Amino acid sequence: MTVAFSRPEVPGDRGDQQAITDASLDGAITASGVSMASVPDLAAGRGPDWLEQSLTRSVSDVVAWRRHIHANPELSNREYGTTELVESVLRSLGLRPTVLSGGTGVVCDIGSGDTCVALRADMDALPITEATGLPFASSVDGVAHACGHDAHTAILMATAMALTAAPELPVKVRLIFQPAEEVMHGGALDVISEGWLDGVDRIFALHCAPHLPVGTIGSRTGAVTSAADLVTLRLSSPGGHTARPHLTADLVHALGTVVTGLPGVLSRRVDPRSGTVLTWGSVHAGDAPNTVPEHGSLLGTLRTADREVWRELEPLVASAVEALVAPTGVELDFDYRRGVPPVVCDEDSTAQLRAGAAAALGSDALVDIEQSSGGEDFGWYLEHVPGAFARLGVWPGHGPVRDIHQGTFELDERALLVGVRTLVHTVLAS
Ligand SMILES: [Zn+2]
Ligand SMILES: [Zn+2]
Image 1 (tube, rainbow, N blue to C red):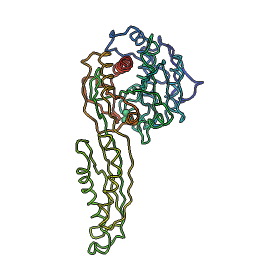
Image 2 (image 1 turned 135 degrees about the vertical axis):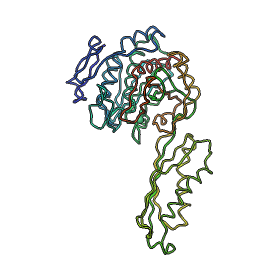
Image 3 (image 1 turned 90 degrees about the horizontal axis):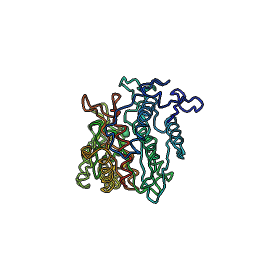
Image 4 (image 1 turned 180 degrees about the vertical axis):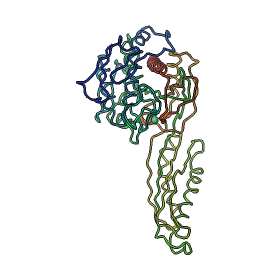
């Protein structure tokens, strides 16, 4: 097929597009300096036939899309060029995509039916300087696709291409190209508030996993990521001489009480099986050894793997902090910022995704994963509908593991077609 690319310096300018055809893709260099070499298909021949034919046609496209998005990364809620690319490709497939009201992010339905399965890819890059030296490395200073969202987007685009080639689908499929996963108030909340989860029965997503070999899919029933909330305390006191703490309010003593006391309270009031942990990352107060300071602050993150616990943490922490500080006479300003809920995969959805991955790649490709203490805004979707979130192996099998959220993050592009095959077969397993 013919794919339209915007030039990187004017990613939103439709009038300045460059057309690239199949014939010109292999090994070609585009105007943006992006190499279009195709990659081996690790699961070639596993079928069905229409999928094989579609992937044969789209193998260059998926690599080209990924490299183009990679070279032109866009920060959260500014994914305009990526949105335009996705939208134009979906339209070229005869689909009717809708751009979210914020101008970034795309939702698009394929097929019809009473049951609807949603597939989600995130689109945003990170404020990180790329240090890979790749020929298609970021062309934007200080912005890089260091979390693999370029791959997620390209995989879902190629999945759309494959699903539109299917003679029939067992369910309606909703593609969600979501903006702004990497920031608080993530794009998942906007997708939900604009009604795009209405009518969805299950939702699935893949995320690049730098620790898993390419060709593998990691999954787990239950929590795969954690909730991560931010706790901030600002304390104030009249201050005074350390010789006379009884005439003022001893702010450092109050801080110390909270530093050790709050984790202790949580360890006795929250089910220890929930994996709840409060860790302070910043404590500041005072300068002189003989002065009671007037101001102090305490910042930390509170993580939990349990969705029910997460819902109850804020009032518990607020009351415990107040009770701990009250006897000291120190004034307290407490701020609790809820992050994302844990991604909790239900048993049926996880089984469906595993069945899809096994059909796509063979059962040897399935690996069990541990829960990560990181956060992921996919958890918001699972507050509303059941679903599963799996890890897509991107480690080439040799050399160092290059972690996400680092300027050196790299992925093995053979994972792209592995991802497409897995998503397509997950739909077919409905
Ligand atoms: Zn990330
Ligand atoms: Zn990510």
